[in-house]
Image 1: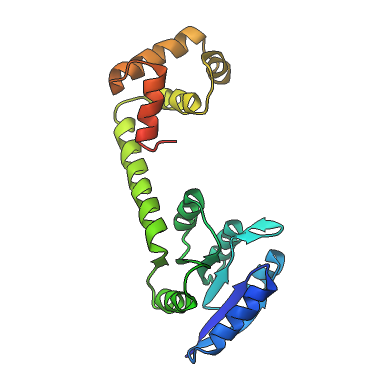
Image 2 (image 1 turned 90 degrees about the vertical axis):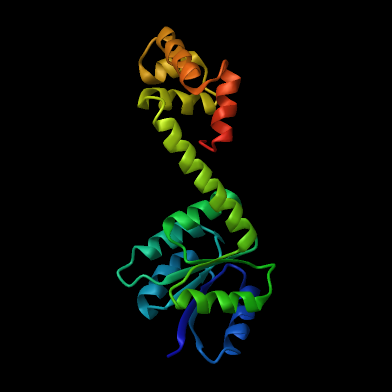
Length: 212
């Protein structure tokens, strides 16, 4: 049985290239393609492809938002992101929402073919170097979150997040409906619990743990 594919990219030349690539594969069937995100869900529901090859940079909507919507469909396809570039936050979000594969356009086309077959077989495929760095950061962030959750209170964690976002004591106090004095007490308590001695050291601690 052929692997049914739907490709979505706002560059027609990419779609033409993918069509040619897929035609060379005896086990691939390109059921449809489109350049507009707003048509993508309609095509998914109409053709029920096994795999959607999707660029994350689409006009009108973010590709990852579109992927998230597709993955909530009753007959959800597997998603392979095929994109020119992807930063760490985008890759992290893609992994979190359940994207099955990520291939960069700068890579050899045969790697996309391998990715599609791997994903169809029930496995996942991520661009190795970027995925390794992202997954390492995920682990560091989750480990850091667990460590800090065991040491400070939820209120102190909220204050730490606001400090990391650049809020001053007065802003924090106004947001949490507490006095500046109470904010200072919470900060002092965090300094002692986390073994730091200043606001700057607290920020460095949060950065080292990849908390924010």
